[in-house]
Image (tube, rainbow, N blue to C red; front, top):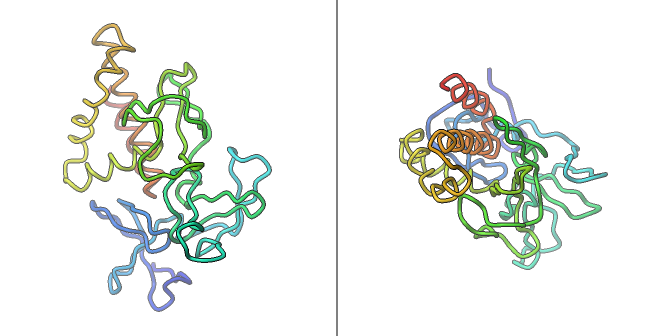
Length: 242
């Protein structure tokens, strides 16, 4: 059964699922998997953009009240006034949750990032301070972000594992577009072979760490790309396979 959305009032949008990427017409950010779609107009919306909340908050921001806007609030359209998501550090181009008091901004999908995450026996906290290099891209700051809005990082309780949340998105999109999603994850994880060797003394522990990293990235990518159903699927597949 289709639903009407104010941003596309001429036709109903139906819940679809395809194994290809798309660009959400609401927040202008990429997505994959399930989406609300109008075939006639090639119009897609993330589930989070299809059903936004009028107001929301986030555990990471104390006493915050984010209001939903279909366009980023700004005084003018110059580059200096460009708004950036405080979660991923990327520009805000469409739908956004904005805290008027503090000037914070979140993409609709980014606001779903949990402040705490546990993968196997490893606990991660969401952090807005860059303390060390990301274990994936080997950089402190993500490319494409701006000074003052560096994007969030998940940091393990032991403070040895640091992952930019946006690295998961880029890795997932690259693998998905090539049509070899699962294989690309295994190949891409070779990038963190050296850090893994430093943290693990034997092959058994190394394999466990690789598995943990795979689950972590799949979980975060599913949230940021607007298909949380994949999150549960990824977790179940990984845990049942081991």
